[in-house]
Image (tube, rainbow, N blue to C red; front, side):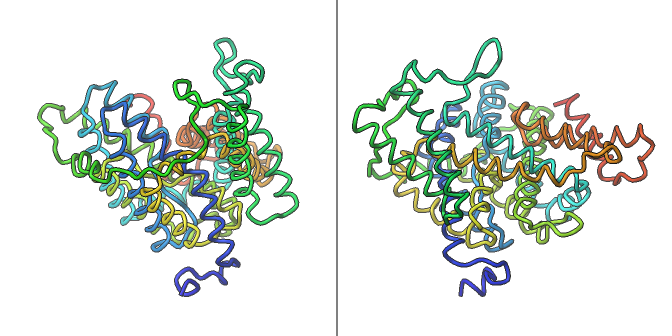
Length: 454
């Protein structure tokens, strides 16, 4: 049955590898079950309702990816997009969260149309291979940076923007968390070098267990006010009736009080960020997994994009911000995941997490951080596929700009924007404009207009 649906032998994989990869992907994404309710809660939404909506939307989107595209990509509420939803649209522009959900819903419908008409596929195929490799490398640096932050190793600093944490100050909270993340990183690295199956998942669980031991012995002290929660899971059930507080609320909106022009701007802001975050993730993870063909194209991309669009639309109805393909899918790919069975495993875990949400939420970010750091290294290795010799500067310099923009601007879509614009401008100035796809010119103009008006 599984062989017939997911074509495991054709993709040189097996059930055990796929399930392990799916669990690994989920473990690296589980933080969203704690983070998304917190962020959208600041917009005035009920946290339990957001948690349920996030779980169900993640299940729908990831299951669609598994069954429609047979790809190992998982979907959930997008980080960055949820922050834009709350802190810009709701708290900044003063719109209600219901209006913001309606904007996400309409964005999803537009994406469905674009996916069915091959527009998003055309955009994917128009991006040159050097930039596709650069996106993979940039995402590697980006998620490694996220991993360092989640570990508490990289912290804010007024003079240098970021710096390393002090291990001696607040040792029982930030210090021990950062130290455990370092131990977890070395553990995963050694296991991966020794080709131990499930090395990333083993590293996550081992780091979490070490954290629990530290809490029981007093080395780690739960301090909720400072963001350091108990590492020991509880088994309380979720109040499922709360979902009614957000379900369908995107249709409970009086647009007359919003202003159509401002509302359209909000829609297109979501549209731009979601489109290129998704494309960037698909390009980066597919490139690392060896799923791109010799022309740098991804077979069945239309189905993958359509699954993403359906997930966004369903998520808005349920009551969560934009649902998108997750870069953490690369963790499962690194474990050998190659088919939709990986995605279906992740989808199932999201579904049952509604019943055991407190258990999954107890997995601390410092335990999943090592996985992101090591996966970042694996994706960064694609840098060797970019030709940096003098004959290829017109393509390698835009690739370099794309790479550094992602972690430094904290956005996959911004990295793609910088990469596309610089690629077109440099080729034009160097009189190689005829070699550039017409779609790339359109994208460059749109990106420039985005920076001017959005």
